[in-house]
Image (cartoon, rainbow, N blue to C red; front, top):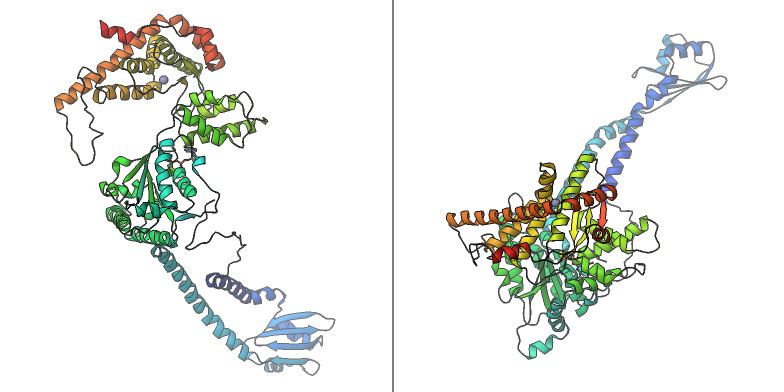
Length: 623
Ligand code: ADP
Ligand code: MG
Ligand code: ZN
């Protein structure tokens, strides 16, 4: 989909060339290798032949006995032809004439033909070449190595010739129809689309034309997708670059890349420039080794300069995305820059249904798949999670050679996306029992608590880091009540309470539960004003970078005290509930050890429907 756009890359048909690349570097490299091999052969040449070499005395002997018909001499090499076609090789000392050798030995040379090749010229040349060539090759070799290194450096300076990905109009188009569950964001962006399509309308009214849009939202909510869709909807060119891509080893590169990106986009307008994950530039103070503060700042400044430099005639929109708006430099969001903010939230149940609808296209499903139910059960899933889930479900169904994806595949895929794949761990019987009681503890406390949703599944199959899991159905709420939060804390601590109750021993398996419960308790105290400290915000972490807020040490001690009190109460409540439900707990554990997983129907058949009762925490409040 994404063509790695060179400048002015017109998206005509792309021809994939099978490249047999000629380059001087390769030419010399291979040339060097070939010549080197040749030299090797030449050098060893004589030793190969020496296998058949006979001593000169033998040759003299043979000549004497009249066997030899012909001797040819080249430098020190003698080739001796004998009667019967045999060929011998021999050597003589250089500088001595063959004639004098034979004469000294008293050989009659009349019967033997002797030819002497004048090799002096050739060997001189060979000598020269063999001494000079290696040097030439060495120089050439280093020259090209050097050139290549310099070339790499040039690449940095040349800003990788706009490494921005460019999506043109005729690419597989993404439009608003491909994005679901973010209707408000789409609504806001329609204005941008309208401006890109009919800029004259806005200019006639003297309206300040929009320049920058900042898209804010958690990961996977479709920020990148929506930016592309905006370009698709407006039918303009889309330049996309991630914030981190601006950063290089050298200071100033980021800024020059920004300049180049904007220049390229200006030539291609109307266009949208999209800077993904802009927090990579927008924050990172004193990042350390490479890049660093200066680089970040220069890059950021360049973006601001470019945006300020737009003339009213420019049909250019800069979009940026981040999931950390809190860390962005305030200069970025001033009027005339990223002054429009589009917020993308995690999809609600209707949104999830719509997103599922988009990604279910092209996949076969059995008729039993109930999208309503899937959407309801996927609370907390982002668009990317949902897409991932359907993909996992499809893989699962394919692996089991099914014809279509069924509800069970989707369930399994959802669990996998949220908790990681099943893990086969070696567990002792004692471990399993411990886990079973732990999970049964969660499940029974949640079953007892009137405001916690019914149990959806309990399992002692380990996944990711967890040994087991208990899932309750989830519904979205616009607000939480204090008593429900306390019920949740009790439920989260139910696992630990069960361990302690049954085994008189506690495990590390509850650490995650404790962490989550503490988070809730802490929020109750410092954010929601739900503790004895009253309605007061004591949240220090939420303060912005430019504001210093402090809490006195006495208050801090009170906060810690309150958090501890809430946790203790939750734990005591969980223990109390589980004590009263001991028979049910044993039964649940028995089934868990046998089947490993209990689904909601079976759960009800074991412990019965959830009973209606007043929240134990609400009672306490009245008293
Ligand atoms: P972000 O940039 O917010 O992290 P992405 O846009 O990269 O999220 O989303 C990743 C993928 O998840 C998208 O390509 C798309 O397939 C899917 N997705 C996310 N949100 C939505 C949505 N609202 N509607 C449809 N698909 C979505
Ligand atoms: Mg993204
Ligand atoms: Zn637990």
